[in-house]
Length: 313
Image 1 (cartoon, rainbow, N blue to C red):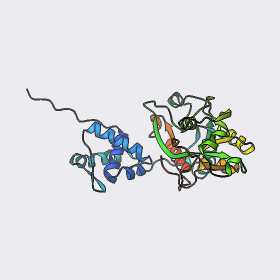
Image 2: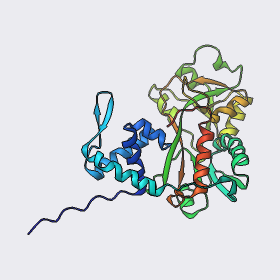
Image 3: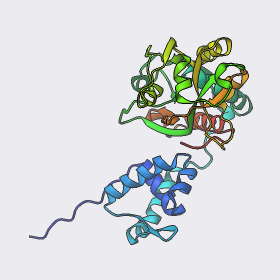
Image 4: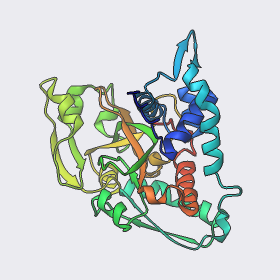
């Protein structure tokens, strides 16, 4: 009895688009830029493609990557899928009408609102924007249509949620001008000895800074916990408490997310401890993936948060 051949693996549209970009660019970094995602996310997609297709697809050859014979054979098929998926003219933002609801922390909303409003006025004047605080669990809210887009530190892992990393920031210590910590080098001991305000919408007193201090047998005093960054930074500008705020890494252009600290006149001090970076991204339900209006919204968010040249996450 002849053996039946295994059926060919089936790729969904997103994987076909990613495969086409990888084969066209022959570079994870360039493919990520082409699809407006991060190299880390594209690397994960390549790993998934390799598992599904049971082929390395792209292999290292000196300083470049070259396609395998299997990848060469798939090139035309992947490009054909992308051509079928790509609309001829796309949506005209000028004809869009309606309201987009975005869920974001106060600092992210403050950074996004001016740029998004400006883009909507220029490109989609019939669109209104509604920002909601982080009042709902984002996964169910996206699924139920209560929000169209979540922007911020995406920490839920609903399998159907689409996530795109936008910028990666680091944490800095924000203090008022003339604060004692601005005099002389900032050390872990001096940082721990100061009074702090913690930002936590769940009311938590501790975070990554406390973990890093504990490794040096240090403990800080948290004087107050506030639910949002804007209130915490305002308090830091008017008192001697220290507030942690996200800022661009050394050598990178300023991020719109740091504008609020600058507007309040806060001094940003480098934290002399290894803290994890803060990845800011956006998440949406897959039913909106091909919607022209939602594509415009995602592009507008992307352009706004990357407007100052912040690094991709």
